[in-house]
Structures are given as C-alpha cells and as structure tokens.
Length: 359
Ligand code: SAH
Image (spheres, rainbow, N blue to C red):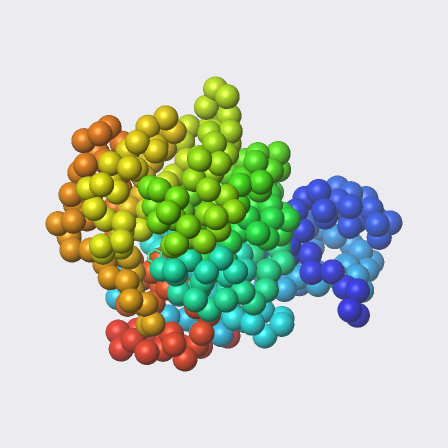
C-alpha cells in the first residue's frame, strides 16, 4: 500500500518510465496524462480506453490524489483563496485571480518559507516542508476541476508560499505537466517562476524547462537588500542580475525577465532608490512590476502614499522602462501578495469574506 505512487505529479517522461516499470507499453502514459489533466479524471475505472486488466493493475500500483480543500474564501472582487491540506497535515494556500479573460492561479511550492524576507508573512512563519510534484500540480488540477463548469486557468504564477527554486525537482516536474500539450498546454509566457534569487538554480533552470522568470529584487543596493531579502548575503545583486542575463540567452532568446519591487514606506521608496534601480537595470531587458507593500499582522512596515508610488513609477517610465503597478487584489481575503500563511485562524478574521466548505 505505501509503495503506491501518486500519478498526479508525474510528467509524461516519468509516466512512461512508470508504465515500463510495471511491464506495460509506454504509450499508455499519454492516455493517462490526458485523462488526469485534460478530463479531470482521478479514478482509473473511468479511463475507458484502458482495458479492464490494466485498470485493475493500475489500482494495485497507483492512485491519483490532489491536496484536500479545507476552506474556500471569496472576496467581493471575485478573487478566491483556498486553504489546502497536505497529506502531512500541513496547510498551504492558493489564490485564483480573475482579470478580464485571464484567470491567474497563484500557487505555493513549499509550506512556509526559509528565506525570512522581512516584509513577507510566509517568511515570518518559517519553513515547514517542500511540496511534492503532486501537491504542486494538484493546485492547478483543483483550480480547474474541483467543481463542474469551473473556468479554466490561463496563467500560473509560482508566487504563493515558498521559494520555488529551493524545491527545484518538484517545481520542474510540475511545470513540465503545465506545459505539456497532453497536460495543460500552457505556453512559456503563461507560467512564471518567481524567485528571491537562488542564483545556481536560475542557471540550472535553463536546462530543464522553458518558463518565464520573475525576480523579487525589492532593493537597488546590497546593503538594503541584505537586510530585507537576507538570501542576498549569499547571492548578491550583481550575481543575480548576471544570472538573469544568462537566462535570457545570448541573443535574448527570451525577451525579458520581470523585476518585482515591493514599495515600502521610507525603506525603498525614495527618488534615490528609483535612480539606483534605473542604474542597476539599464542593461537588462526587463519589465518592472511595482507592488505596494501589503500589510499583515505583526509587520511594522507601511505602504507608501499614492503620490510616492506614482512618482516612483513615473520616474522609471520617464527613463524608458516598462513599469506597471500591481493592483492589490484579494486583500479582503488576505490573499494579496505576501499574505499567505496557511493558517486558518488568522485567515478568518476578515468580515467581508464569505467562507464555506467545498468538500
Ligand atoms: N519566494 C518567491 C515567491 C514567493 S513571494 C519570491 O520571493 O519571489 C511572491 C511575491 O510576493 C514576491 O515578489 C514577494 O516578494 C512578494 N511579497 C511578499 N510579501 C509581500 C508583501 N507583504 N506585500 C507585497 N508583496 C509581497
């Protein structure tokens, strides 16, 4: 029983190996991948193009199981936050953000986080565990299939709990399923891995899967970044930006990286900071995404006023950068950037939210 494999997190390659290992033809992998990720089927007995013997055999060797939905929170603007329970009992969160025709899913790669960025609620919680590939892709599966008539997810961002590049293998395996035409068929542009800057793994990423890259920069000098993003002491800004340039490839095979910059009042929001950013990023093809700090219980940081935010943005635009402001969606359900803590009691404090058990 305990040797049974959860096939939900198996990419096509891994599924082929699985079928070979159990003495079956590897083309079966394609059929099973489609059943799981395109038709949303979790039960081998419903996979009608597999013969009965094979279905029985699969039941003996494997199962297909996403994390369990514990709670669903819906904000007035349509953002949905889900609290999910892993097999270990740990909780994680995922968020669905509808924007026009887009439905973006923000997923977690770890329960908790070890990086302790000073402005992040997940960081304040500490590290709990890595998610396996079934628990990562299981979030996308749930977002698409947990209810009939769910609108399909169009974009996935690894911007929930955890540092994706510190859970490399499971993140890559799940990204392969997201990209596979027999899986979710999402193009490179629709999958974004966001990292605080694990330089060796940015370099490694290039050899494994082609996705978009976002860097949580948040400071324009090492002194400040050492303080607010402590992993910077190990991988300072220059090394990080060189790794980004390498990721874009020699002829800029990929067009740009996204630079994320949280604006925190009186910490990194001055004109000097904006000038520093312009200087740093002058040679890197990038888009800058400004994120006004989202507050959470226990943090002393504040969001700058709108004028400071707009001045910062205008400065960058006037210097020729593409700079956008991330609007705060999901605030009402504590689902905005950096607010994910996987803690039920903390999450139910808001009055605006509607909460109901789904399964
Ligand atoms: N560890 C990864 C992914 C998780 S964080 C990373 O660092 O990129 C996803 C995004 O949310 C990052 O840009 C992160 O810096 C940002 N974020 C974290 N806390 C925030 C807060 N309190 N307000 C606004 N954005 C925050």
